[in-house]
Length: 131
Image (cartoon, rainbow, N blue to C red; front, side):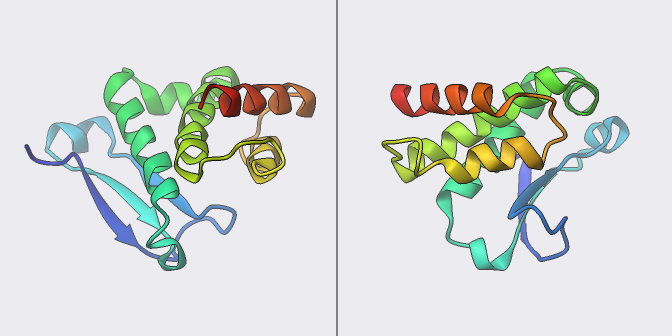
């Protein structure tokens, strides 16, 4: 089975991210263009980050109009990022919320979400408990 993505190691991404999934538009997808997973070279061996980005590829393939919904709906974006960060939580085998503080901070700052820090803390704690 052919993969639906390519991995590119580059520092040519937004400075606040270690990785990024770059999705083709509908025409590009129709023409067979693959998703590009961009990862900073210093994170080349970070399996958790790769799994985070692969989760976004899975979401892109699962949800019709994923990119539009991701950009227009804070609730959808939050749900998608929680799912992706859960991959990192599992990979890194976090046992407590202190280990995942950087995820809480990222969700509070990087994704233009209007969600209370206490709610993010509760949701990330729940992810760790279920992992």
